[in-house]
Length: 540
Image 1: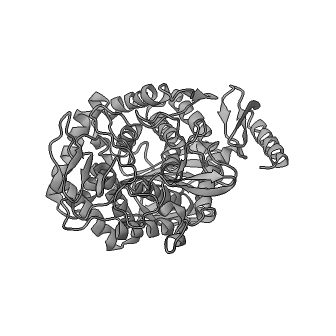
Image 2: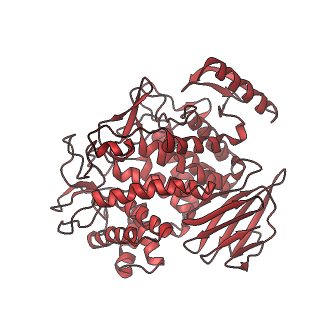
Image 3: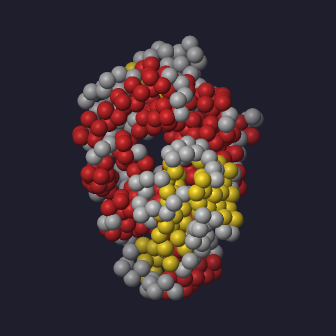
């Protein structure tokens, strides 16, 4: 950014914030090229203007970067015909040129997070181009990254491969992992992504891929213990050799079975058995011990006492949409948020802060504590949703400051900075362009005031939505599953809401089918819809 543009941006920010009755000050710090702006409490607020649109601006910048700014892979052909995120884990900015990080390719993290980020952005904006990007990406992954039917773990996704590989066969270059070795939990997450894409497209290729994952998992399930989880954390797929017995990131596997059971697809009886074992294990062991083990896709972690924030966070966020997962969820959610603070906010890499300008910032796992944009966004989403349940303003403030900090992890064109307080950290495609932005939508569900005023948006839905359309005083979409709940912000007061032509009733809460409306002021409303059927929803 030129100095003239920087001065103009700061001036506009001051004008916008002053109009909101806040007295901003400039910190001495420059953060990713942005002069840090603090409010009258001396705590961080977003850099972009208008401030009330800052989160929306952040999300649009990141998708625009994917659509317009990503160079293709280095050659030879045909690899050079694909964007860098297909075959590399991350990028580094070398004097304005994006060069691929040649460490590895974290397929098992990238695919689920990009699918979630895309489907939520599509619902939020109606921009279906992001779903096309992700559909092509998942198509390629199935065709080039699935184990043969002759393997001990058949028709199962590869979760890692070497940087630049066009055929995915495992991350062997590090000498830590071997050919055909995968993380079973991330493969389950990929199966859920395949199923969600089937719901959106109707293409049975994705359903077949999802059922293949579920069938292999159901066949391999076991009763978990303190040292052996319900599935091994890592296996070598051709031989079936177990290379790590314990993991705790099984929320995606649980949800894959849950969706298939409710849709009456596949071997439902076997899926019910596996789902029950997954749920019982998570409640009995990591929830009680705190050992939410997962080393992500590039490590050789083999431990039943290792901790990863992602594993705990996946479980925490799932409980808001699936309270049946844990009858004690209202007790356990704040304890899990505190677990994150104790283990990954206040524990820090050497020289790094726990908080910055009033924002809690969050690390990743026991063996890698640098503060990360996507982990900080995860924490903020949990706090925002818990605020909506509890009414405790302190959680809203924690979420707000952490998300504000995350907005500084974009440059003005949407190039991400994964760990801006750390040295020599690459910017990972899975984290920065999948896992981080997808967390803003559950945060919007908790605090719809943070979505742009005088605009219409579907803020969040656990169910996959399709046929989304926006008009001035009408929103229409088609949920693919039931029951379900959608969270919206509207620039008009809804007069009529229908599901498949049947009118829904205004309710005091969402304990039964219907909708609630909350006046946000200035003609804006927060609308929550609970429906018992799938089909066309019209709000007008």
